[in-house]
Amino acid sequence: QKEVEQNSGPLSVPEGAIASLNCTYSDRGSQSFFWYRQYSGKSPELIMFIYSNGDKEDGRFTAQLNKASQYVSLLIRDSQPSDSATYLCAVSYNNNDMRFGAGTRLTVKP
Amino acid sequence: DTGVSQDPRHKITKRGQNVTFRCDPISEHNRLYWYRQTLGQGPEFLTYFQNEAQLEKSRLLSDRFSAERPKGSFSTLEIQRTEQGDSAMYLCASSPGQYSNQPQHFGDGTRLSIL
View: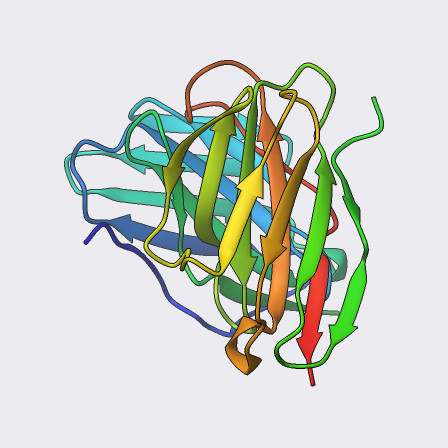
């Protein structure tokens, strides 16, 4: 069974802090990794994707991938209350489907 | 580019009825996916199309579920003889190209409530 695991949270950080969200996956053949943000009652919104080991930065967001450890993370710098949402990790195992974790709920307190 | 469009946004129906949802993907996106999401869970893959061809179906997709994408553009998802357990958000996503390594863009979803 291909699994994507996330800590469900809630993760609470103060405004301006760095939020660190983690995800592990079970299939070493996984090729592509995505982070989505989902506000309550809304659909998932793509934040970042990463294919290669290392870091990828986009504005306040940094995705980190370590295929040897089967680990992908998302860092949010200078967290804002508007970042409060559920963050979904998604992994593409082959050329067919994508599997999602259950998500981590993030709360940024003013 | 108007994004992925889903209709209806909400559907309330009695158990045993049939329901059909529509998804219009981003134009020229070859791939179209259907997911189901329940409270506190991530989206669960149901099925996907490469143009008009349905290439994979999840074990979650019982014989009461059927999906079509007749001309490789919009898609429909039908649930026959609905059950209480079918209550969920049904999400449609599309992506360009021929592989799942491309980011998927989601519609706003159809929330199904079974009375």
